[in-house]
Amino acid sequence: MSAHPVRVIRMPYIGERNAPDRSPAPAEIDDAALHEAMAGAGIEVIAPTATVELSGGDAKQYGAWQRVALANARLGRIVEAALRKDEMPVGLLANCNALPGMLAGVQRALDGRGDVGLIWIDAHADFNTPETTLSGMLGGMPVALSAGLCLHRMRGIAGMTRPIDPRNILMCGLRDVDPLERALLDEHGVAEIGTEALIAAGGELFAAVEALAGRVEAIYVHVDMDVLDPDEVPGHGLTVPGGPTSEQLAPALAAIFHCRAVRALGVASTPPSERDAGGRARAAAQRLIVAAVGAK
Image 1 (cartoon, rainbow, N blue to C red):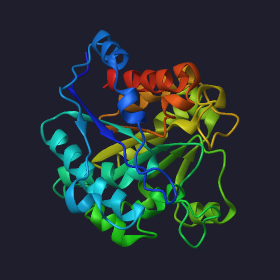
Image 2 (cartoon, one colour):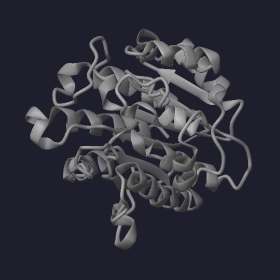
Image 3 (cartoon, helix red, strand yellow):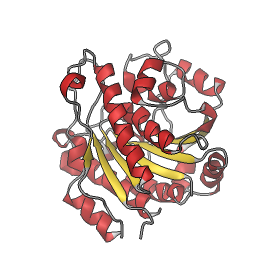
Image 4 (cartoon, rainbow, N blue to C red):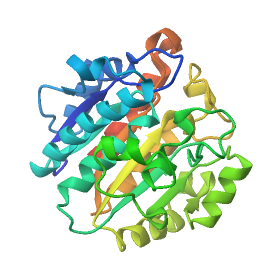
């Protein structure tokens, strides 16, 4: 049985310009099948599910980036409250733009006692800045934002007390990195584990996770569903060949969550049901969640 009750948090805000404001996917993942699977694995889930909602003046903010920053501030407060009650926050995230909110909650719950580390499991590094990006998408920048390379006002609104140290980031499964983004990763000493080592869930992964845990007080683990084999996420617009299946990734997540420093999980960018043929992506996300938190 999991040692920590789980606090499921829906974060539907997307934060991209010229796109819908919200995704239905977080609510769709949080269905009876997920709760039955967690119960079957001996995982206690706190009811009701928490949902990030903007209202009043916040909902009328003039830009998508501003609104997602405000939504991240609310997400961070929910994550912080859960951790203070010794719960395991599990973020069901519309996309990776929710990273600053998840980190903010973990950071503030520490009350200044040590640093926060990030294990980033994604086909993309999301380490671009407005100066290096090829696409212009905010979704390609959240790790760089959180590490203090850009968009400082957004990070502050989200509630991060300070940037995370890039040397406390472990990237796993990268397969599509822009040229100038690669230069930034190298310049800032960001550690990486390749797809094969991630799937193997052996000594290389263990050593990297333990090294990170030795430098920080708490670790947040973030999974973008495009890290998976494209066959499992057919409705995801940014898939990259060569990824693991969810069945292959699940043991790696379980191994990571055995680490004492891991405190929270986020699963991002699951395609909504209208683009998820046969519910494959939703089932994959649920499989990863149960494998991770069931190992804690």
